[in-house]
Length: 193
Image (cartoon, rainbow, N blue to C red; front, side):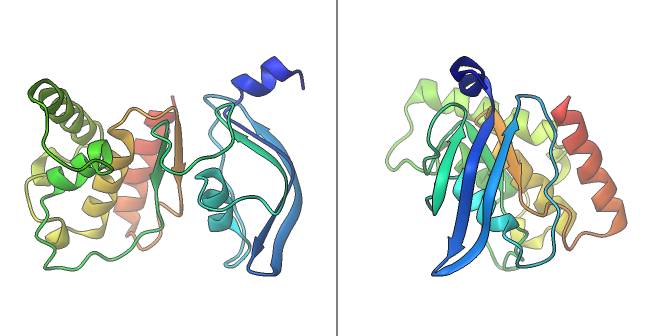
């Protein structure tokens, strides 16, 4: 692959290996994912799917090989990469509203006061992300009191709020009933278009 093609690719892996501690998880992974492609990674529990996400997010380095995400080495906190982690049950008493939870995806890395112009733009982006995942009816309720499907939609809105160029979803359908699996699948398919 020519260097210019590599720079345009969403993800390029060249002979990448991953370890967990001293244990080799997998090796020899070489692949290219182009912008706009919709890829599913399948494998049994413990096969390293979540480890792949940790590599792509820059949370851990490859044990061997080279990896590029959007033309650069993966780095923690890359705003161009939206991420929905494996589903976790949120405590029922979590007092955060769904809307505020989504807002953390926009500026959760910052501390201090919002600037007036920035605040308006942020609120608009949060509203657009909530609308994109059809979560308006429950966005102002406590996230801990929402169903698993409703929480999953808000997690997806949080990943979308910064308009990322790449979206990584780690087991987005786990623990969801069939109706919510279909809803999330249709939503993700529409976003991929």
